[in-house]
Length: 150
Image (cartoon, rainbow, N blue to C red; front, side, top):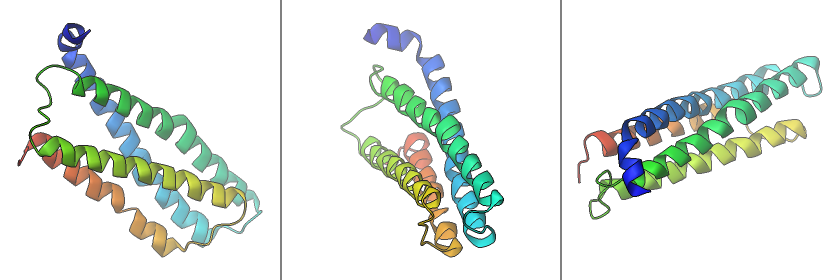
């Protein structure tokens, strides 16, 4: 199995990068939808239903599969011989950031349910601030993987 992973490494890495790009697009866009949903839409209106449908499809059709694929191909890379040396510090920092990004993904899912139940209590400003979280994780992950500073 390990030899097989080494043979398909370029494909695994390519699929991992494509999955990450798709996941990140959703992590950047869903909080922006929440900003506009919070600031411009009246609960129970036709526009509220439209926003809920867009948020649902973004999360369920794009973000969830992209996150699952990111994890799947990322773990395949971890188990590919010679890719990760766990005695270095960078993989641990990267892994922590990926766990943080996964937490953020699930936090967004919980906020979407708040909108469904008409129970959103957060302001647009909060969603704007939370929209910066995936950027911070992305910077950490890219620096760890490319620069491998420690």
